[in-house]
Image 1: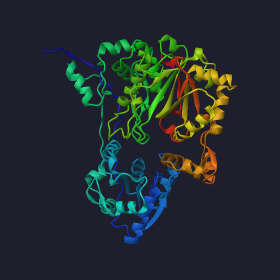
Image 2: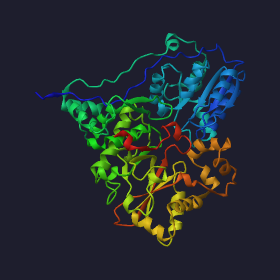
Image 3: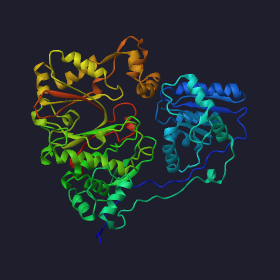
Image 4: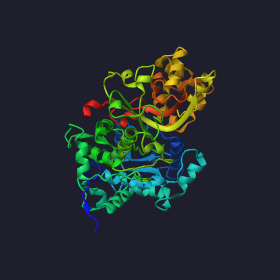
Length: 96
Length: 450
């Protein structure tokens, strides 16, 4: 029988995961403000514009607003604050 | 995904749209953020290059992951009442044991392979004895936290200590005396296993007396597999990165579309004694007697040539504009090339300035690029220079695509030929996006880790 040996685990130390709840949902989006967040990836503006047009055609009672962060991949607290202050929902799209 | 998680916490129902190839990554990121029920929707890959009509077809079509109409997922995701799982999220502790349960060598080797803890080349198993021997090469306590690392900006960062770096250095086949170099590299927080779709690698440069102390090769084959220290220091940094950051698994924690052979190992030393110019670390504020390691983020493209010959200026111009502009070049020269440029009247700085002044493209070409559009154009719109000036240029106007601070020159090689390379390699901490991936200190004094 082959000898057993003890070796180290090579992995680092993951942070504790703390559960976070989702935000409460509205019953309907009618009359609500939905922010369409252009994440600034190549061609994401074209996708967001098509999404805006979809809402205008199919759910005209929904108020859509297009918004962009200052930089790609970098958190923009001011943008988030504006969405949280004015918006009822957000859709973020889309890269690559 | 990070933005969606943040908005949900601010009380805004949010739907992140991703392309279908990111489905596993999105699920893993949401779980690690404690919000596993976040309501993702997916469109087909790619979005880049698709016409408005094709993008509209994505919206009118089927979510390729959830197999339901895309907009049904959007509307339901924003309006469906929360259930118990949505309300509580997921709280859990994860731990990685210091030691694995005893097993046979064959079984442990298989375990390391199955868990993606190797680069699929043979490793030395990190036995307690080998790790203890490795740790003797530093005065740093084994439990000292070296830093935190993550595969990309919006992933969680994992913490790691001196012992974890020693464990991975053993696996790479490094000798104990190499450990301070690997610790210094890891302390940058820059991952040699970035999960970016662009298949980046890191390229590390060692300067100062430690090159000779360790017997590193800055001569013939300096950037090849011809020296134990060069090879295993680079590999140790790579294995450390993939394991201490929480993995480098395709589809989950690695998304590089082509992959990169430089991810196996990419560490070299400057031929300081045979260079006509000051060493790289001295150019960046260190003493010549300091031992340092500098980490560059790149490895995406390589151009090469000989010279400088009569037409070198045309050749350099062609090579410089054939780079990817988001990742400026490190120009690595054999000492023969560096001395020839000295004979032409150049200092290192004046040659860098020549390169920056002559790397010009029509603005249309510069901006017609996935990453200049994604990463640099928002800065240009916000008025950040030099990008704002580049954006103001007319489409046919030639613009300088690099600043002198973007470009670096390093001298190494065996003088068997006047060869040089231009390697993709942003000096970390300089340039958009790089500061969010590391600690903004890309050159580290190795002596502090002895």
